[in-house]
Length: 251
Ligand code: 13P
Image 1 (cartoon, rainbow, N blue to C red):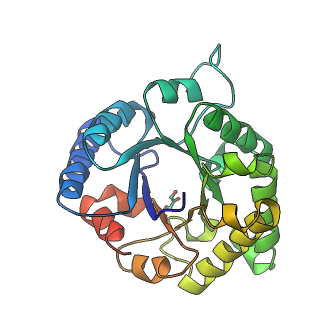
Image 2 (image 1 turned 30 degrees about the vertical axis):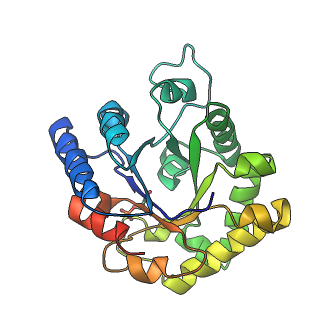
């Protein structure tokens, strides 16, 4: 169902003590606020149990940042969707641009992961977005269209309802260069139009599309005010409890 969502992607940051402090602080502060927004915290794997234990007693969810593209077995170093499900993890980021860039993940690999997650009852937070050269060459719509079609469009109308989409223009990630509200709205509306074409309006209206890329307490309001922007996938600003909470309060 379409809901406002703010998800924090901690990426590969923080030692155990810092992670413990941060997630406890987020839980405490969240307990003091009333919000309809779904809040998700995605720490590195070693801190997932800690996060999920706290989440189960508080009003947020724990999410993973990645999942293996295989079922359980001899794949040293990998973590399967079955394992995440066995820990009651409800969300998992897939297709982040950093995974596409540094780990050569293809749209097909991401489709495999999306399918494995859904099969195990975990909601994928599917990331898409263009690099700067693609935007400069006016190819951003085609790039995002391909990513969405190749990774998601083998799903049924029922399955896609469990997917959260995050539009993260790569040029805005970690650069301090945020997309304007208008740029985000334009791409989000386009993604929704693709979903409408494939699955119909009733389905596309129910899918949350988040914005990610240098989103912070200063610009979150402008971004979230747009009708097709249903929240954010937050990197750097999610490492500070006050900033993260301020973003959650920006609807
Ligand atoms: P920043 O908010 O640090 O730009 O990162 C965004 C992101 O990649 C979230 O997945």
